[in-house]
Each structure stands twice: as structure tokens, then as C-alpha cells.
Image (cartoon, rainbow, N blue to C red; front, side):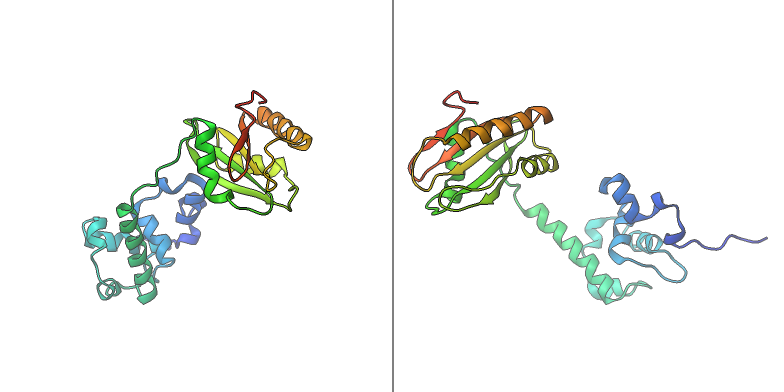
Length: 231
């Protein structure tokens, strides 16, 4: 009776290959063995990378905490695991341990213009040139990310709304806030500031990503379009 030739990972259906599976279905769809197979990259003549990973996991009763306790030399005892692959496994598990120890970063929540001013103060205080920033918020008005979009001269900077909303979509933002500074200390918005705000507002409305405010920042005070009912 003839048996089929053993298939390597490259000959598997694309959706069954660990790397392709991660791309198509996301990291949560992969088993522990498939994740380790991605780390080690290749198997042996008789075993695929996934089978090799399954063999390693089986030796520790599929317990990742026990796997993390294996030394470099203990991992190298497995056929197909050299020093480089053993180091990859150890490094990955150590990163996971450090992540568990690290306290999750608390996201700032914007409830008023004063919150926004305090958030941006470390970034914009004492600037001698103009900068334009965007704050990306989730549904609870917590900051996902704050990002400098452009840097200009003393009197202005160029802003591209396409870049703003490209990043907003990438961050899955539910709303955004605009901030730029006036190095001169003048709090009043210029005609260009007003036109730009309306232009970005219109684009945000079309994409269902509202612009909640536009703040003009100076070292000692701020101007909020929202507070002045200009939004």
C-alpha cells in the first residue's frame, strides 16, 4: 500500500500555513504550535515547523509557562532547534512575560478644552515655529493617539486633510480634535484657520468622523472653536 508523500508547510493549502493564516485570519486564529512555528521558521527533513513546535509543546504538556522555563541548551536538544531558533523562542516568551508585568497605559480622556490644553502643553510649549497636531479619540473620548501632522515656519504650516483622515481610519478613531499653535501669542483665529476648520469638518462629516474642536495654542492661553460655538 502506498502512502502519500509528506507535505511540507509550503505545499499546504495557503490558509493552513501559519504566516498566511495570520495575515488572512488574524493572530488569534493561530494555535500555540503555529505561533511557535512562525518563530522557528523551518522544520526538519521529517517534520514541518508546526510538527516540530507541537513536539516541543508536548514535552511541557502544552504549558507555555513551563516552556518559558526551558534553557537555551534544553531547547537545543530538540532535533531541528539550533541556537538561533532557541534564542527566538526564549526572546519571544521573555517579551510576553515583560508585557504581563507592564502596567497598561492609562489613556487620557478629553472632557473639555482645559483637558486638551493640558494634554498638549508638553508638546507645544515654547515653540518658535508653528505645528499642527491631531488628537484621535475613541467612542469614550479617550485619546488613542496624538500626532504632529505638519511643521511650518513662524506664521503658518501646510495641512493635508487626506493625511488626517487616512490616519484616523487606520487608528479606528471615532472623532478627532485639531490643535495648532500661534508662536506670536495671538489667540484670534485667522481667516485661513477658519476655512481650514470648515474644510476638515466637511470631510469628517462625510466619513462619520466628527471634528470635535480646533484649538489655537499659545504658551499662556488657548482659543477653542468649540467653546466659542464656531464648530
